[in-house]
Length: 415
Image 1 (cartoon, helix red, strand yellow):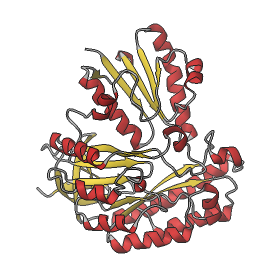
Image 2 (image 1 turned 135 degrees about the vertical axis):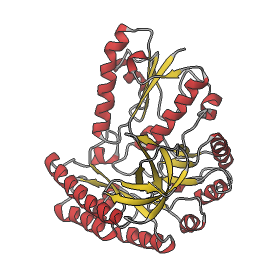
Image 3 (image 1 turned 180 degrees about the vertical axis):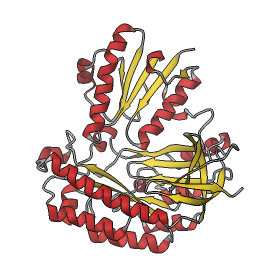
Image 4 (image 1 turned 90 degrees about the horizontal axis):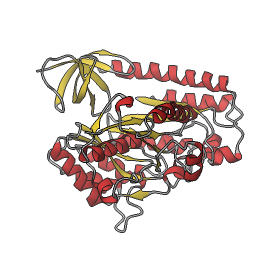
């Protein structure tokens, strides 16, 4: 039986596409191996959203050159956002790679029908489901539109059919994915919205939970907020990246909203969805960002108190508007300092929010085991661990929280 190995870094979309690739291999009789040296086919699923991710991908590819030389029968393929439109250049630079194919595309050894219909035979309790590819926003710093193209939504009936089949096979929670899920459906003939898709999936009996990400503050509709509040299976957790807390920087980023717009949106969400958890993304050290402008980002995070904040230092991405038109003028040491300030702030805020759960009972969907402990997430995306000898895989469990930290909680099962 031939073996395969898939190496993945980057966003949830990459993870979803790697899962689909794995399903395709399994349907063809391949077996997954963790040892890359034992694989007959190796796929690198890459990311270039940040420079360090690109460096990791390139280093991994270069390290495989020796293995390919000693085993010329090995098939090596590269996909993900590192693969740009200039495939001929990549083939010249890396002649030992057998296949390059762009992020989200059907692999060259498969038929399109096989690719679109590939589903895991035994899916995990939580499964990623892409619903829209690409992005039309062209934020100044972002390479995604150049690598994944313009927005392309999957038909609502196709997504619903896939989720029903996943639920039949054991999936209990789906995470709907898109670079901008709020744009879902605008390019389809009947113009469905994300709210329509959520309503449709809510009727699947064996499905427990629905999540989705990522939202864009300028595109999130009032109807979607009302739907999240109304539908019981949609988790009360929203990812809503602000990226910066200063209007001049937001304009330079081409985000399409102001700090005041963002404040009003957060107020509306918290008013209509009591107890909602909010996660955020922030970039520090964007070109020309002054210390007072950075402090406005710190003030926004301090005032709004997000449950989770993903923080990155700006790195120019070739081909983007910022890389073409702006000077990367913030020194690396200064970016690192600002990154540390936001990380420490968010660690304190998250620790304070999570401490409020001690003594309370929460419900989690168990996703697996790590270091001998079961783990899962609450409706509001808190990661919780607990000890128990019984098999809780894929089950909803009530836990009394006994310990909290900034990144996770620990509890005891009530039964």
